[in-house]
Image (cartoon, rainbow, N blue to C red; front, side):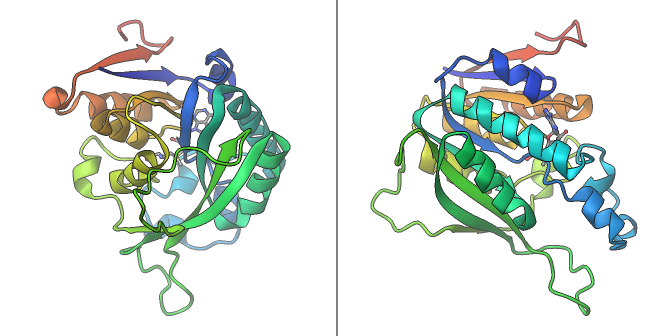
Length: 258
Ligand SMILES: C[S@@+](CC[C@H](N)C(=O)[O-])C[C@H]1O[C@@H](n2cnc3c(N)ncnc32)[C@H](O)[C@@H]1O
């Protein structure tokens, strides 16, 4: 039976309660520290996109505050992840070098920088500049140089392509930066084994939780914002009969939570 644990709160406070050397894979998509940068450049995004993430309020930190929060995230990651466990972190391309330095400082072994290409991005300013259609990801191993890599003898390129998140995955409202299940499934299948424990400390709408449940991985997720935390629960409870699982919800603000 798959165990899913959802924790509402600030992951920088909550991760300290997660057991040392207990996690097989961290797959996460933290704030990219680009909302203020983009707003200050007056890119007209707010007018063009109703749910622009820059206005969502969770990517507001100064560069220094964000860098310090990522430093703490990697320190805890190094403690929580097993030796040989994997870490995949999505990131804006302009912040990749900072992520690499912080990860190495905290004992993670750098493996790969890759790209997620969105096949149908919004064609913003297409007659003026390149359309923004990629996000980056970095892959690390904790305290060792190699870990689980289920390539089945196939050559796996450092590149994944998909359509933007389909509306069928957003039926409970969606999240401004919600990742497609296909993209997260690719990493979880490749970098973990059935029954392993996956962690996403910046869970958003819970894509990592939904995929972990579907493909038989145990899961712990943390999310700060109540509206997204409720969305994750709805997504997990959907199609209940699909897999035998247990759900633990830790929400100190909501007494009726399980
Ligand atoms: C880029 S989004 C993640 C989207 C997610 N991958 C999905 O598919 O829906 C980042 C999320 O991290 C949350 N967040 C930001 N800072 C946090 C913190 N300190 N602790 C927990 N969650 C945080 C935000 O509320 C936001 O939902």
